[in-house]
Image 1 (cartoon, rainbow, N blue to C red):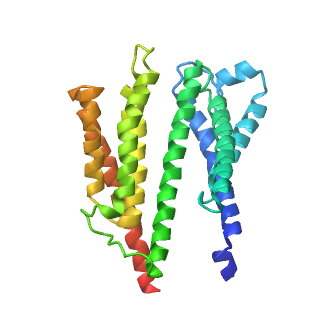
Image 2 (image 1 turned 180 degrees about the horizontal axis):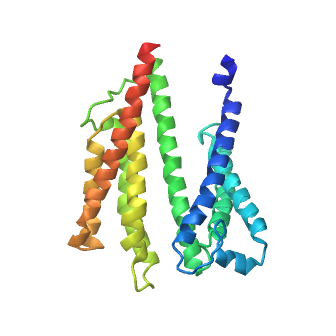
Image 3 (image 1 turned 30 degrees about the vertical axis):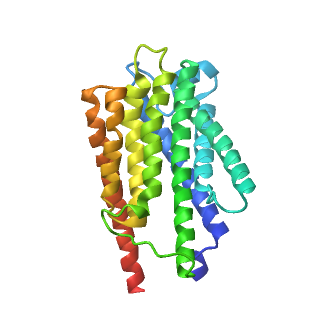
Length: 287
């Protein structure tokens, strides 16, 4: 019985894959139902998109089966994502590249079956770019976690000086996160502005970045900081300040709300992560 509650790493990984697949297989039809609810055209099929059904000519049952299969497959790839730092550098690069390729293909298939990729090629690149951005952020956070675990092992062995954590204004424990925030918040907006030069409406820098990419980045990195270091208030302050240069270089004063968005989502992630950290510490003390 104990082996069931404390499974091996392989069994745990397979369990994560199964759970991820089932959750995604449930979420995809719900997403399609929500997208259909936004349509003003009556008579749309409930569980499949009318535009995809018309374009393929498939029976709706077949399209629904494809929809569920793609959802399950994508969920499995997310659940089976192994720690990227295991093995040699070559193994890490090959495994990450294969995982990104497979998961990107499944993600593109999901966007297609949900009727989101019937526009121009820019739509494809935008949706895939959002996924690659999220993938890169999560990968880098796992890298920072791996570095943190390695440092703790060296500290226990007496090979490195212990670093203090849990101090709200401590700089050294979060310097890796600060470097990542600086790269994302200072480099991504100019790149997006270059990509949309031929467009009359700045969708990438005016909508996608401040309302999707920036909140996502600050929330997930704040969560990671909170779980590893506790309530480190320096991080949300830094996230807010890093948005200010581009307010005046790429936007105008009305875009100062980005500072509050970045700081607020980073703080929310930190508080949530710190609560999880505190709960685990209490659980260890009881045992």
